[in-house]
View 1 (cartoon, helix red, strand yellow):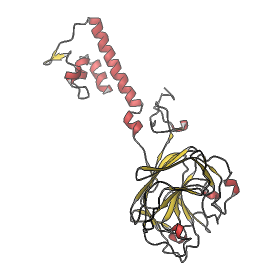
View 2: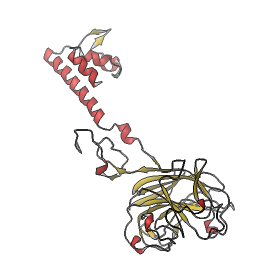
View 3: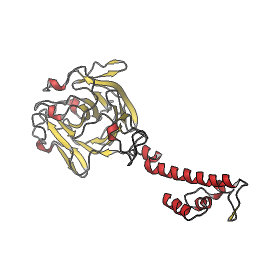
Length: 348
């Protein structure tokens, strides 16, 4: 558009007529009725100087608006959510297993695998579960984000599982220290657990997306919650149906759980503390200190599980409106992530 306007000006063309007749302009009845009537020029009775100034101002405003649109993010681009697929549907690229009693990176008995486009947790190569709790860690840490995991429980619990509590039980662990800090025999990462539970099929209520706190504490309804697990308000999901679990995580502030789009639990101020974890390095658990962020992992806790989607929307990023990668939904400013058009400066 800018090139066309410059060409028209250089050629001495009537700029009002040129702009009004272009396909990007508003319909003539909305913008140009005072300029044209049946194709004939019919300007309102302004002086020559005012008319010339008007043409100059119109061109300047048009060029300025077009140039601004080219250099700053549009409303659509600022609002467009850029989700990251943490699971690619093909392999475990970007993920590292840690299973109790085994070294980091040892995927014992092919516990975590990808088949038919699904991330599967399986125990068909186990002779006995033997408290081999496993966690599959994603490579990057996050602090402010939305995380979606779509899962379903399938099949039967592994032989010699840890008990009925582990039947149709798994979860997503949030805010963990680096997996390198886990001891070889450590059972769970120090973390905030968004617990996945399936119904036992006996008609009793069994909610999913509960909270459990291995090595951590949270504030619930104004005070430190004293128990290891906090029950959500979700309904019970029996059988092998898919469930969409979502977590809204705001650093060391608020964390909210959703199930199939409905809010089911909210708490705040995640911090190191509590028990519920063994074999950990004390240096990785400074009790009382708030947890701003950390690593995400998916559990293997003795019941087979399918996962078809793991997606994350990072809420920490550029919040400078003059940057090309500004996003309106960011809630945590990361100035060093901003990208600017050549010749522009931050905040300009």
